[in-house]
Image 1 (cartoon, rainbow, N blue to C red):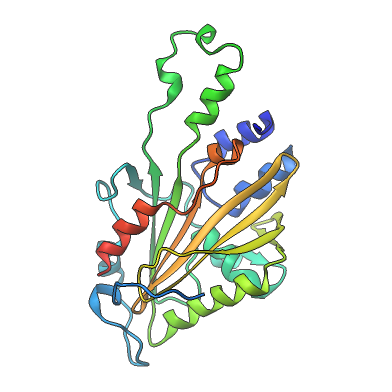
Image 2: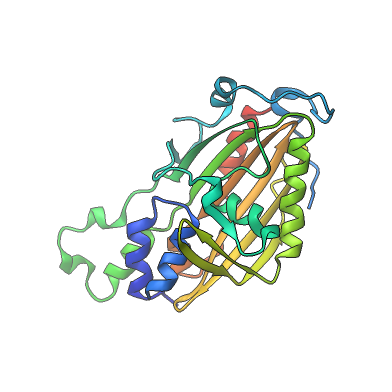
Length: 266
């Protein structure tokens, strides 16, 4: 079943910005797994004297243009919101809400973000006139054109055991906030009705993955997140696919993005 035009128009206008406001704005208008990689650039930074990476080194480690097959990589359109402007009504759920908006969990010494957008040909490009897209084909073409993953990647580095503690806050929040929560991003209010743990990618030293669902008048809108620890550096991923949401097709955090980022952190 297709979503209504309200979601389609809202999605088209905001698909470039992966944020809590994307979900709440549209709705108002219409764990731990073992991995193989070891630490940030190789070491299991679990000692209390571990030092965070500098900003310049972190910039070199985050995915860049041409490094993720099938994706365009660049700056986060719209930027990452300030941490203090993204808050859940229950502070226990803050790590989930902030991870979904690209904000690193915990208190990192340094962080940086990129956006990876799946590179697909727009199916409407082959149409020579509106007649070519008559009888429902236009709606199909629009949903197909939006059927692409948009993933925000944030790398953050921590002193001491800050990375481990940050992952723990996310893992604890997935359990504590399973029944959903309300929150606010710079005045935009909204509510997630369900948080579900997902199978993580298995990369890094430990990871936690989850889905946050916002039930709108047009149906459920899922957002997918994962936080992976590589030593004392975290990779936080947040993915949305508007086209998949419109057609109720399952999707997850973009595997090629995780693979490419994990490879740079080995």
